[in-house]
Image (cartoon, rainbow, N blue to C red; front, side, top):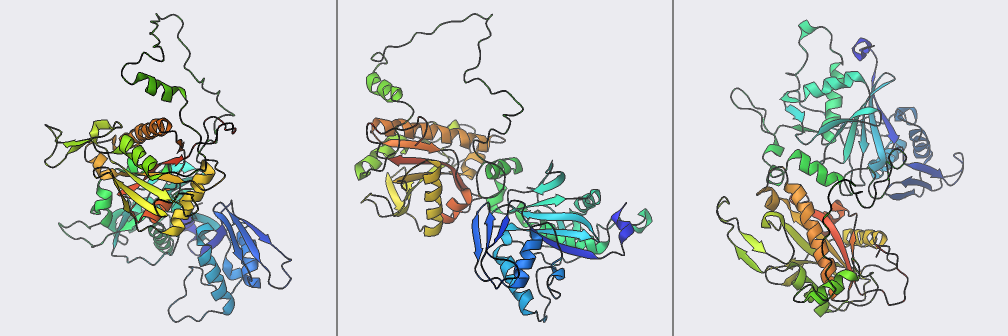
Length: 515
């Protein structure tokens, strides 16, 4: 049955909580106001004295999409009061609470009792405030938005968005055809084609949902004959260097902009056998044994290097003090610029290469190092905060960091590194994406990830040679790093993390492969 046949039914905006959000009431619903705790994937949210209307709304929202007008009669379903509208105390309180917990609130558009479209927040930074769209203003899907099947529905996602849109009915696919870069009213179905699959009011509201979620974009200019509409993302310098594939890969392989599982989840363990640690030999092919050098026979400085390798990938990270000389030696031997030179034929004028201790595909060296020293550390030098390493001058540049975001990074690193205390030194590795995409097509982001591995291996070897503990971390929060360092994550974002500290004292048990 087409929703178009239900044009007489009311357009309804429904509210609910994310499926992984749980509401705990510290007393019975009929009792006086008492705290309510929301247990979310991003931590607990505590409401100390919510009124009865708020408590009832949260109870209903936990069960699925509901109309909040059934709780508070004058509640504005759109989430915003009309100009000049005076709201009741209950409606005002409920709006304030919903704004505070907006990153766990799911918005659903329905016709009658039929849900059509849901917008789901994906991160703690999500905020959703749909506004009416001008019918003459062109709109289109963002070039970064992708459509895929997941969770039993067609889903729209974008690395630029903190939301996912779920198309819950086949008729909702009509919306995608309306987002083709023409004015909303110009994209309407011609009358001679018969009744539209969706009423205009539904289409207009649904498009405003997608625009508010950052999945659709609005033109800066309306365009006209011979002058196509101008969309900001097509001219944003921070986005021009990105392909949609690379930006999606980056955002989905880091925390902060999605709600997918990350880390050692062993997702396919129940369906597929584990891969062997070493690829089995074919058995029938000729094998050429290679000589095994003696520990002392690797050539100049071979003994020292082989000793470093035989100690293991790294020494466990302890809680002792790091010295200025140790930090300087680590950076000098692992990441300094040794020389700068012109790459030769094929490179544009002004595109220079450098030579450093670790390898980089095409000598792009798009990586930057930021040293984060939490205030709880034992070091005397330098002062707590964030520092950028200048590899040409071999110097540290103090950053104007955001302490709250810096603390987020330290807590995550401590947990990921399995440390008993905050890390003495967290090195956040970022990439200047334009440096890589300026040289490579199609493999720019892949080259960045390979360079990160080369740098982390070099840091590990140098740290071991210096007698320092080290640990490469598997997970980092790109959004928290951008906030901490004041970076535009679209042009420079964290792509790796590395812990440095004094080694764990001899005789202290340490599990292999952990900090």
